Amino acid sequence: MKTAAEYIASLRARKLELWVDGERIPDPVDHPKVRPAINAVAATYAVAHGPHAALASAHSELIDAPVNRFTHLFTSPDDLIKKVEIQRVLGRLTGTCFQRCVGMDGINALFIATWEASEEKHARFVKWLEGVQRRDEMLNGAMTDPKGDRSKRPPAQPDAYVRVVGRRDGGVVIRGAKVHQTGAANAHQILLMPGQALREGEEDFAIACAMPVDAEGVRMVLGRQPSDGRKGGPDAGNARFGGQECVVIFDDVFVPEERVFLDGDLGACATLVESFAGFHRASYGGCKPGNFDVLIGASDLLAREHGVRRASHVRDKLVEMAHLAETVHGVGLAASAKSTAHASGIWEVDPVLANVCKQNVTRLPYEIGRLAEDLAGGAISTLPSLADRTHPELAELLAPAFGSEARAKALRLVEYMTYGAGAVPFRIECMHGAGSPQAQRIVLERTLDWDAKVQRARVLAGLDDDEELPDIR
Ligand code: SF4
Ligand code: FE
Image 1 (cartoon, rainbow, N blue to C red):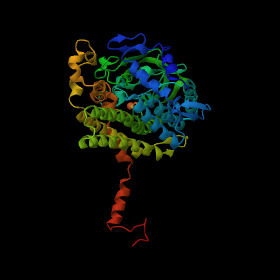
Image 2: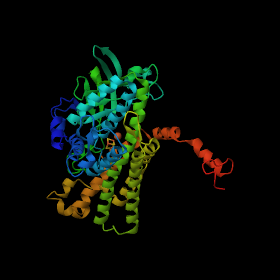
Image 3: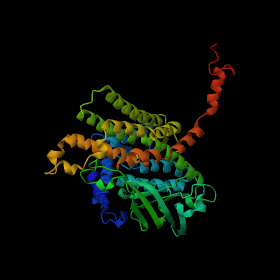
Image 4: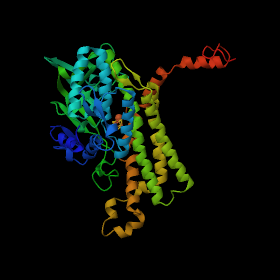
């Protein structure tokens, strides 16, 4: 298992094409807008060696060796529970998105889907996964297509979807783009997957395959985040860590067939998309509560600095924030504990609870953020730069406005998380990541047993006989 330093060093060997603010970046590792996100991924490597190693690593039966949990298969309910637990730890350690879970959830969904597709494709996938585990790679799980006009199917607007545009000896040629790509520029490989279930006639879009991030024709463009110009400076808010999203362009990329895992398998693609959605919706029950812990901590720190920590309404607001955080975590854990075995050997989360988890994540962070802004006061929006706080001419004059160093930095951290760069994982990704709110409601409506509920109501109302408790009269 790589250390954090080995992971960062390994990124320098790539010949990645990355564009930031209209310029091609020669070495992304040292770029101030990229490095905080690399640091957050590095934390997933660091925890496999420190006091969290028991959660952060696992024994892989595939290679009969210890592996980082982010490359591990979910071979028991315990694996799913530990996944959510280490995600919470990392959410708390970094205060942001550490970007490695899409790949982890993706390999598990693809293990199931290739198992359903054919023995040959499954064997191909497993062989590739063994290499990922041995090299302890960071994967960019690439699913979301631009989608264009949502009322049109992919064949009516092919440029809005990644698809196969050519077949040559021994492989396929891929064209299109994936958007919102978490941690793409910090990865070793791209695990490309379809973003939605596909129909007959849409086989060219039903492609799942892998390629190095610097394969010929792969081009990445970094997404902007609010206040991202502050990264690396005194007003960053979160001094060392950050999230990342890229547009990844596939400009006629050739993928050899040993890395093509699904190709036109419509049923397996539907399985992949549904299974991935379940895994990733439960994942948010780990990382997001970890991020909430940081915001709760910053709010508590500010209350102490302001001398109001014992005020009853302040205590009540902090308890409310913590209760909302534990609500999300509890459902993520429950979805994992109530998992069931797929015939391939992978354990799948409870679909109702995983979707309830994510549905809560589309709402509760907004309330937690509202309470944090309430407790912080207006200074989160009006504070001058922290560079002014230590300026020889201004420091003394500004001392009353800034207060202590702890107050000034905690204010910046709350600002960062609620509407600065950290609001991307704290708010917008909570809303739309792993599927927008309506996607979860669709699954819930389809999965819940409505007839069973009606039947029980009929029995208790005295309309039908009670076959479940016949002896009680
Ligand atoms: Fe992992 Fe959470 Fe980031 Fe998704 S949002 S990649 S689950 S940290
Ligand atoms: Fe996500």
